[in-house]
Length: 587
Image (tube, rainbow, N blue to C red; front, side):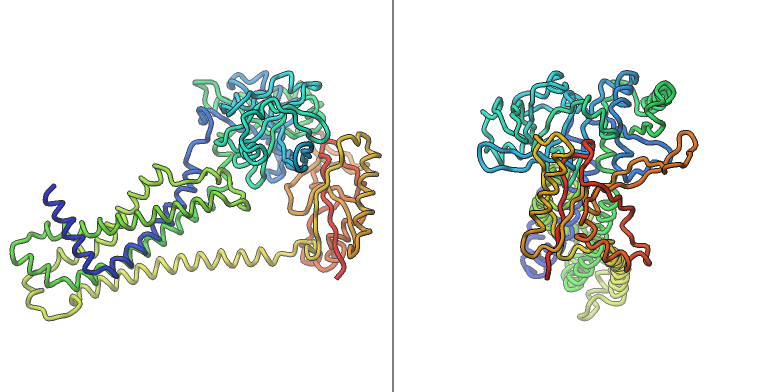
């Protein structure tokens, strides 16, 4: 220990004699290590870390899957209530199944009463949703079976963020009556901050409240449920998959009225949540690892220059009796001190960077809000810094081991001879090769990004604005809702500078929704059909979005936005009551 202490003190004195050079080494190393620590923190939160649930390895995502289904369309991966109930009652491999309405983003709720009116995003979840996931509420309770019934008492759960923002964390909010869409609902609980529904299941969407899922209502809406199950202890995912396939086949035979366009594909819930981001994150991690290699190559060259300047000192110490092991120990100690300082700088950089990343609202990445520099990130950073220290020490150590003290003392002044020049040349070649790889990869990514920006959209977003309107829930008939929409369009078109206005139930580039369609007069083989992506629009929408004007210039380049269904502005109840309004103004 006394020898180690002496080596550290000697290393610190050597570093202080070359403050500027060592400061550059620490700063450059800190940037490389900090970038790796930041990306690792994101990778760990999204891909490697456990979900914030009780025994998350037992949670399974069950998606609808059948031959020819399109995984990009939400309606082809969600399930019907009747099929969900068959799985729940027949599959023995689950402790329980639960579900939520996957199409919650198409609707909203208007909060009125105390304070300013506010539009809220709410998701309907089953009464056992939190029990199956193993989430403990901060206050209050989850929904009861009665509240999830057709005529149940109106109840609502507040997300932690909305509770803090709207009610300043008031603990007396439990039991308070709120007015949502003109109806009174009772606050029965508050969701914990560790469970952010939007971050897990709908990145990019801010969820404010949760309401009970009423199966009798959802039954009339088609494929709308996202299904989650908890495995029984001792049961494996492969066993449950086999059982799900058998039950699905039985249901298809016993209940032909359900059609043949449903199936079951079970995967781990963690894979469902994070699989879409795996490729991009791992590519990014590989890129920053390449940057760290370049940093180490630069630092190796710098350390070689330092060693060349101190060759006489090292040779003199060797001539006075210092062994090569002692000399190498001094070099390794200096590198360890520098890499430790670089690691500390990198952790500070990573702490700031992860705080910024976790607060990003425009990035649709699951679990992004949970990104932080934790103990695992600190341990990985320590390993990375140790590895980096060894990497940029290898070349100087090898040069020292091959050197002859007598030869060095006989040499005149210089930079270390041909051998040092060859080592530095090899480092430069390696550094250039890695830099070229990263440069080529970055160039290809930039080229792809520019090409994507140049793809014709099929509509003209310039001078177009959109706003969302929610008809009052008191409008129960289709005629009343149609009159409401028509009145809104008339008032908007009467505004100064407005050229045209129209309505749609979903804007372009929104989530895909497919419906089964059949042409009139065409006979299809049993069990077959066609599907189409559907958008319901009203008069004036094509002109407001510039689709009519841009169609002639884009159809020759096969850049049409898809099939446009021209229908009345009256939406089906299964789609939701929220619509988007587009208007363009005159120049």
